[in-house]
Length: 215
Image: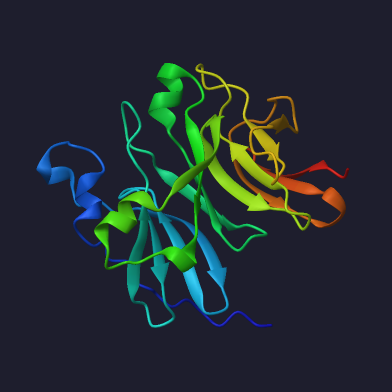
């Protein structure tokens, strides 16, 4: 299939959720930083790392806010990735960088059921996201493998900015987190689950894709 160019889909952050995520100077908000993308046949889901929202973008470019991710203790959640689980729900990883540097692993994977979302109901937007996996280091990429296993790339795994990793989380037991590299990656930036349990990760600063496991 030939590549036929780029079409812009404007993601316009809607108030008030974009203004609710942190009580900073008014000039800083509303804020929008579209970051993670999940493209499905009839829709696109986008994590907005600036507004801390999950947005639904339709083929005509219109967008709606489905979910808001609550503040951490110090800073905002910063959702960075979205993947569709075997149950059809969406799983969103957060960076939570500042809180992780201060308190230790503070990133969360949230679950959002898109069939239960109502963009016209602010209460639903603010409460539909529920924690699925907690106690993780800053997440900047996530994916499900063919067998339903969840994988997340963790930018760092210590408070001195060292030891990035990819973590494996069984779908049925999200409190079980298994390191795939022993915290040896250098600022990993993404992850993908392939056939037969193979997992691939991207790594900075040399710019390479690594095969992490085949079992």
